[in-house]
Length: 134
Image 1 (cartoon, rainbow, N blue to C red):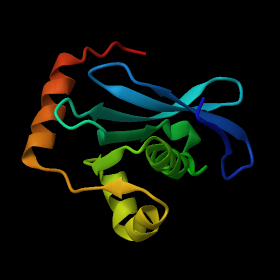
Image 2 (image 1 turned 120 degrees about the vertical axis):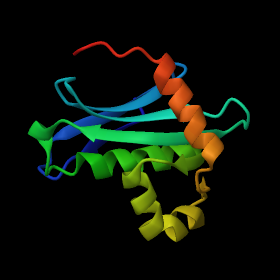
Image 3 (image 1 turned 180 degrees about the vertical axis):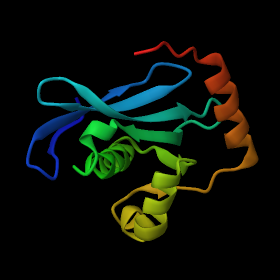
């Protein structure tokens, strides 16, 4: 577990990290342990300490509770704690960093824009990753 958090309703949740290769995931779980959202990423095999964030998703049944924003903030906070540079392919992350990037950098965070090589890496990783129905 990275940290216990509370959504807009005051309900407890936690964010955990699974660094499985090729695709790692941060997952937000409700207090009962029910996973309700995720952020998927690929750690760059060529540049140590770069994390390409490419997908954020929260179960629609839990929409409006601020869980996507909590996930974004927790992933960014973890990147500061672990000195990881964020490469935001995910539109939610890119938008957040466009609005709050100066604050993130002032707090010790690092990010850079994605390149075509980053996009190609994510495409290769997602082709290799077999997804099973839930």
